[in-house]
Image 1 (spheres, rainbow, N blue to C red):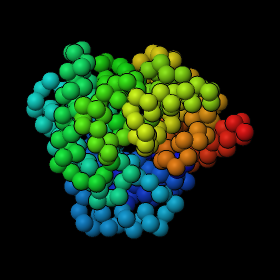
Image 2 (spheres, rainbow, N blue to C red):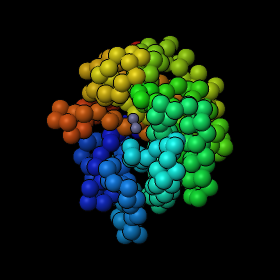
Image 3 (tube, rainbow, N blue to C red):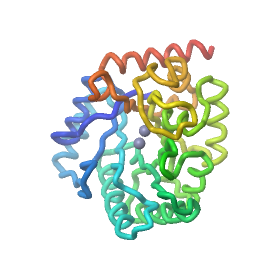
Length: 286
Ligand SMILES: [Zn+2]
Ligand SMILES: [Zn+2]
């Protein structure tokens, strides 16, 4: 498992590799545009070359690009869907240029409207983004389920993949905090095994492509999305150890999106603790 962290790409994507290295990360995740503005980033050839060189010389072996939260592929407003499409295509092109494992996307929100229609709209937007880009995978992240967000259950993720045409570039990013908050029990090896079995039967084989390991400040089934440092929330150290040692996750990038002691993201020490939790989980399974 390539355990890593969400880091800032300020100063260019090669700087994100430096930040990952400083943390001892084996994978990193970045936003590829300002999270508060509809302005897709196009990386220059020089930035791409610098990034690829930095990555080749580092211990960081995987990059995830997280699409920003402004995007809503399911919006009832055609203008928002159009802006979402433009951003998503730019993210997939950036992912292809930088050699990313995937672009990770929150599937969208029904905002109180009909969920079936929202899934159809999201599917159409996603299918169009795939049609207008090449190569890079697009992985839909499961959500905590607040405020009509799509992707709160494996069945919804499966319906989204189907609505988007079932393209082989489509996959799933599983967030441990969101699973627990949406009412999916994962705090024992048996429970997590059953949950992944369900995920695979609902979304298809080979779809799970990346992971977010976060503890959850909010209770099981609360539908509230508040990340906690590993071991400090409702998953606890034991639940995090289970998630980090799941055999079917062995080859995947797994980034921490945790607040950290200073609300600046996880520290080097916390990343080392995550690697240790994985070892603890492996031991407890044998
Ligand atoms: Zn996310
Ligand atoms: Zn996440």
